[in-house]
Amino acid sequence: MQQRVGQCLRSLAVQSMDLLYPPTCVLCGAPGEAGRDLCAGCHADLPLIGPHCARCAQPFTGLGHGSGKAASDAKGLCGRCQRQRPPFDRCIAAFRYEDPLPALVGGIKFQSKLNLIRLLGDLLADALADARRRPGWQPPDAILPVPLHPQRLRVRGYNQALELALVVSRRLAIPVNHHCCQRKRATQAQAELDTPRRYHNIRGAFEVTSAVPRRIAILDDVVTTSATVSELAQGLKQAGCERIDIWSLARTPSTGSSGRKGFLQRAS
Image (cartoon, rainbow, N blue to C red; front, side):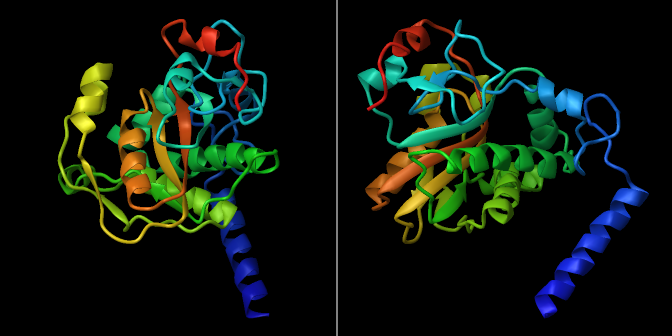
């Protein structure tokens, strides 16, 4: 009874806020849809990930994208995953990192646009809910947002990966565990580096500080080269984690031909 009353009060609060501050699309200014700050037209125009590697979610180039469901277009293994399996088991990403995703992600990382957190977290949760209904889904015991170094956390004031993880956690009823691992070394921003330097930059940056769940999902806003999540996953595997998935709002498309080549081999 008490729980039902609490739910009713929360529902009334949301309705009141919608009346006072009606949802407005953050991209075009039109009325939002379904209580979100995103209209139906802009939502339909978001770049769904489309055909991608079944393991690392690297979008394949030249195969068409944007019309399929985010979690259902895995077509095989990219060339890189064929040559060397990554230290994680599977990556699920909702979108390709193409317009307008850079502006939206940049808003939560560098411009303190916290109103975008709930929207982007809900969009990621939509993709994960779709993946959950499909064969091969293995629910994690906990969600681990990629840790920020305390120095960067003080400057930014919050960890955007943790904030996204809290939204996803509420939607999927999976707990967040952000205490089992920490970033022990301040690193140069990965976006400023090329691929080889990203792997060197992030090496040894994380430390497992307590017992880890048997199955865990690492959550990051964007996966580009996968250097950060791979380094974190490797440490978790060494600490005894048996299965590691990567959950990401967006994945950067490949720039070479390995994606097309990988399309020919089905995932095992």
